[in-house]
Length: 108
Image 1: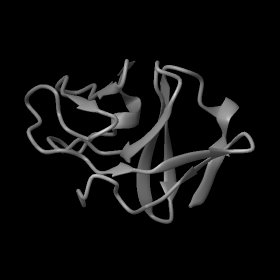
Image 2: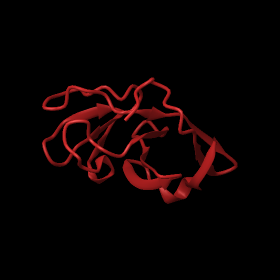
Image 3: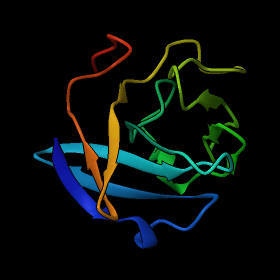
């Protein structure tokens, strides 16, 4: 697990972009108060998901409006049809850690 930032660096309902050993990650503080990490690129177009809107446990691509389930990486609406990688997250002592091994088996 790699330390990304402190919990307070990601307000609830927001996403930040982080470069983790050369992999772009969108780190999201979901409205369910959980933290999620997905690959920071829409599977439909080369657009940063971290710039999209968080709603519940989904993250919306700002360009075409596809939403991705933060737990599974699966798109919940068109035009995206392919899932994005989801990375395991741990919160320890007020810090957020991410593993670069996708928990959903999707590689980029």
